[in-house]
Length: 441
Image (cartoon, rainbow, N blue to C red; front, side, top):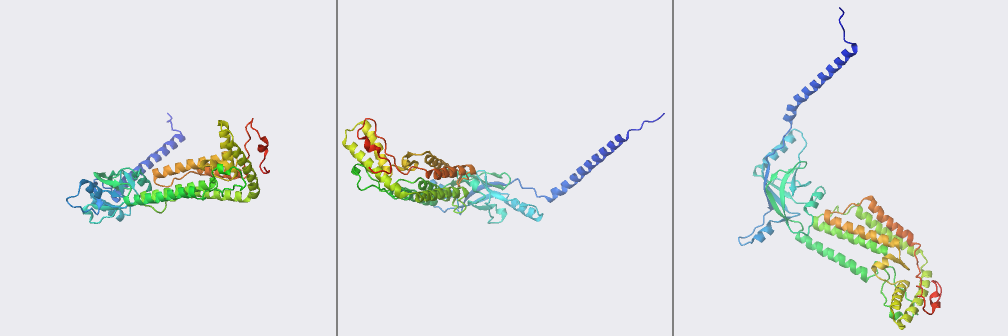
């Protein structure tokens, strides 16, 4: 009988399968043999480390008559102080560090943990032999620990809090701890200095804003032959300038934020970021652009036309003052007085000044003012929450820049001469209201 032979393709497949199985078994055997050697070369991290206590260093010296409140205040730590930890198993941590160094392994960084937050960049020192179990940390605000400190120092105006204190490796959980320490978020001396600087800043800004022409456009120009001027109160300075007020707002917000951050974190460097510089740059560029546009426009011709309008308005104001007072005439009188102030370059109030041109409110001015107020509010709130200058994305910065650019673009076509309000129907002396800007009364 003839024996059946397997096809050549089947034989080849079985041979390849056998080679694959043998290769897999060989790789497994090599890995199994390497595991003991790898374990022998590694330094397992100690697990029986416990932080037993934490206290301010050096401890305050109090007499026996000290009250509990005085003892609590003396034991309270704050940013910039040194705390001393008593750690069971500190010698094992030291042994682990020496082991890894001798075997050329990567170093495990031991960091301080406050309220469960790893204070990266805060590495302690051992003042005594490790067997004594003492380790000290200086509570410093660093670039690496900025995010963690923001959580610990949140709401710095709130009451003191008790912090859980521990140590651990930077990329792991903290060791077991029963240690706590009373913590004051806002240092007394820094708080006093911060409040003083803030009050001086805000007070000086408001005083300069209202009592000088720092944020105003020119001075009032009232014609000397204007009738009825005694019946309209005059302002010493011109109207508020939108571009100058915007630049002033960003200056106040950013400088105030800087003072606040330094007061809480004691970090005087690395506080101003790109967002703050961009916002101040937009404010400065808008102010310069507005000044250039105003300078390049024909001010002398506009001044003459405004003087003609002012005379017409003053005559009508005087006429209404001597006429019978009714609700309609009172409203007309108020409108004429506002128009007279605009024609003579006087202020009609901060908000009305910055959103209005010579004839009333303009949308592009309102848009720029509104976005400035909204973004300034968001900026200030973010600073109090993260204790750092916020990073606005490019969209928000572009939005502020776009509103400023729209304002400058449309400022060129704004009304420079005040229109005389039309006289209500039924009133006499219509010819007085037929005067157009630029003509004589």
